Length: 225
Image (tube, rainbow, N blue to C red; front, side, top):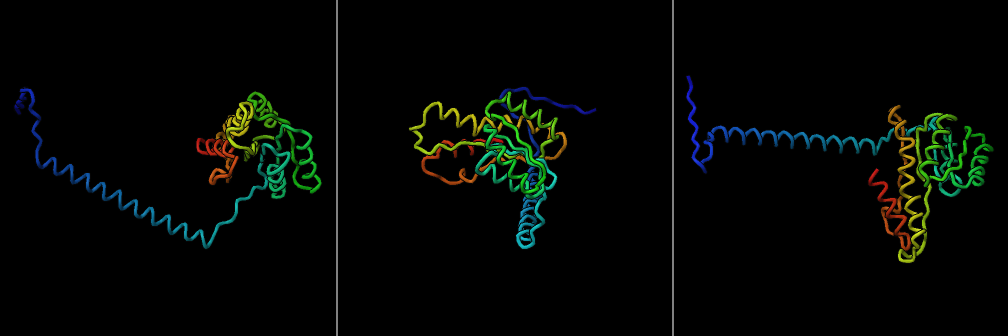
C-alpha cells in the first residue's frame, strides 16, 4: 500500500522534483530546436523554389472557357478587361448601371468574332438588384468562375470638399458593392471548388493627391476580403 501525505498548511507549494523540472525544460528546448530546423528548411525550400520560378516560369493560366463577370464593363478599364478576356477565349458577362454604353462593349466583342458576351444592366450598390441579376445570370449562363469587381468612382478633389452624398455614394460603390457581389457568387464558387475574385487596384499602394477617399476604401475592401 502506498501512503500519500497531503500537507494542508496555507502558503506551502507542492514539492516538485528537480529531475522532472529539468526533463520538462529539456523537452521544451528540443521542441524549439526542432521547430527552428523545420523553419530553416522551409525558408530554404521557398528560396530555391522562388529562384527556379524566376528563371523558369510556369505557363500562364488559361482563361479559355471561363465565365468572367465584370462590373462596370461599359467603359474605361472595365471595357478593356472585357475585350481582353474575350480575346483569350473567356465568356464575358458585363454588368453596368448604364445599359447603353454596356451594349457598345458587347457589340464590339461580337464584331471581333470572340466568344459570345452577355450584358446585364445592374446597379451594384443595390443588394436586392445584385441578387436578382445574379440569379438571372445563373439561369441564363451558369456558374460564374471569375468575378472582377471593377465598378467604382474616384472623385478628384480635396477630402474636405466632398459632400455627404458624394462620400456615401463612393462608399456604397467602392466598398459595399464588393460585398454584395461576393455574397451573390462566392457560395457557388465554393460549392464547385473553383473560382477567382479580382478586387484590387494599384493606387492603394501609393499616394495620389485629391484621391484619398477612393484609395482608402479600396484598401479597406482588399484587406478585409
